Length: 159
Image (cartoon, rainbow, N blue to C red; front, side, top):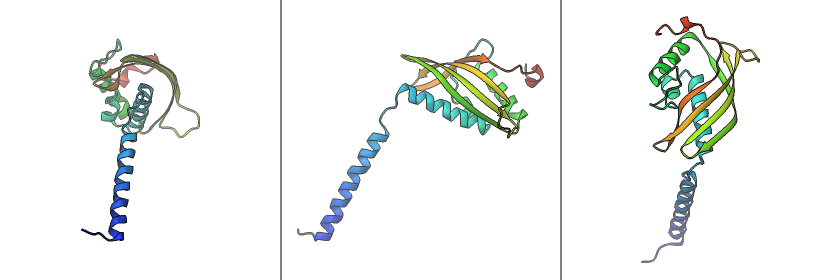
């Protein structure tokens, strides 16, 4: 069987394209470092909060979350109440410390928060720490705390 020169180059081009696609796919699926995964989690959560996306926000939280005040369910109710009280939220987190030890990590962040404001100055500045654990290959927040603003009790009518 004899093939034309044009067919030969077409087949060769397709083979080269297939090889390039496989290499790009392989490079794209290369495992990310734990630090990269945690930074991506924080970034996804930032976007979810700014869009008042409850599901996206809570996806970052472990089912075993406990911070001494809230369980995951209680935290969920607090987030719902907070989202209902504001029209817009904008946050700018700055990760200034991340310690990873095996399947556990601790992140420390300073977060500028704008609530219903277009001002260049944030409504509040919060210092936060978060404990994370790797669960089924995914980093999730298991506990958090920090320098929270004084939030009036009426903000959380379910208590």
